[in-house]
Length: 472
Image (cartoon, rainbow, N blue to C red):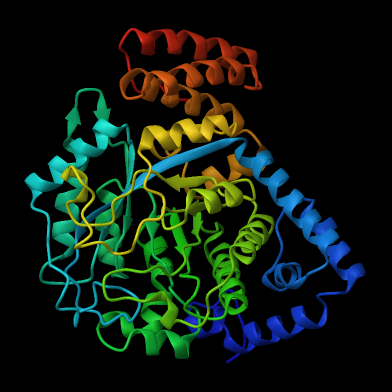
């Protein structure tokens, strides 16, 4: 099969031969200074790189050039996303699953993990617990099980989540991370008002994919890999992709990930809204050391930097799988969204002590949301709980057009400050509130338009008086 980014066939737009040729090309040219300089100069135009160009940068091990790559990634991130970091939390609805994935404790043969599925009453309690932390954006997760977790159950959960208004709390955006499904079901998710549809590829290597998914519907590589095209056909124009680094050779996954982004751009005119970069972690009966493709923290950060350069407009996500130390390093290289105070067990947020018996993976960053917000601000990042673009219809190509033009600064920056103000008023500790008020005052001056600055100041006063949910 030939490589064709415009094809709708998985093995043509994620082409094994093209990936292997790309890896060989990158290795052969990793010390080609003239070529590397040319690629870096192209990247400075902020229009992205193709998978082969980015793979050369990833392979480059010249310390001076690597520093240039890191500095450019940091600058590109600032240019498009400023110093804002969007916060969210995962909400696990059910760990019933019929698949046999070798890297996930939810696999069907695992008889040690308790199986649990939230009732709608329990979903409501979880949402209230998350709202009481200050969260406004969730990513719901569920195992693949047509009996226990049918699409109707997911839709009922979304409806419940949006319906809960506790004190000043509200979940304003629900992203959905569930198994590949049909165009009809994607239409139902769109009608339910979801934000982004997220689906990790796990690995782009078809042979290894089929080995790692020996049983269950997820075994079908083509159906899984082509899911985003069906989601787009179903009207969902914000999709999020990612791989689980550690399952296969990182060079292979990196090239495949960028080829997937190129495919979405070529076919649908808009690339992925987000790219996630999780790594295999310990969980229940899963030992990450069984997968012989682990990568160092240094290479993990380099991958993030090269993704940011290659796909400059796309949001990048890092979860609490990673430690505070790793998250601190990788945020400056391109990450724009992080989870905070995550619990990866079903029903975990209503428990006083963090439960471990139904966790999908071990959490490395166990801080509270207030502690994460405080830490971000001390590192000069604005914690943002903004969901305005999705609710104002700025999704898909409309969001990307704003992002590429730089006009997003007149929306996202003020929205971040106003949602931070809400958090400070409703949920923050005294120390966090003090730091946050100083940050807001400083950052108002960085809003490009004076008229917008004045509107923000007026709305901040109204937030202090009890009003909520202002947005541009």
